[in-house]
Image (cartoon, rainbow, N blue to C red):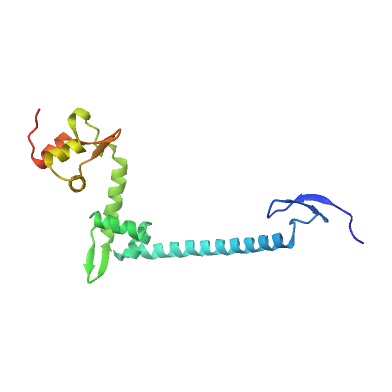
Length: 189
């Protein structure tokens, strides 16, 4: 006995409309059924790997909690940042390091101090300098002419001195007070 049922359905894999001969049919073809099966299997494997990685990561962090000195890899895992970001932080001298030969070590206290500094900087809005007004600022072009240096040299000096630039429209401004203190210039005011 064969069934004479004809039901219009939508394939659960490719979302195309097809005519099904049974109530339980979910896919328009064997190919769509096989592709869906492979997709489900790969998603299960991916989920298992993700859970293993999370449990491994949690176990590693628990082990790291007990350490007093960290290597770069351990410190980046402990802090939850990439190695590259950690190297940037080190190059800006925000974390103190120790070297033994070619190996780099970071003290736990240095990491804790850095973390506290991030928390304090994030909370302290008063530390951000306010724009003093255009009349109290030099443009970058004015400053280049006044000092007789290239744009790259000027930007490096400003970066090393920690002097803020303010962008207003298409111009970049720098506080006259900061520049006068840095270069011992006499104010015309």
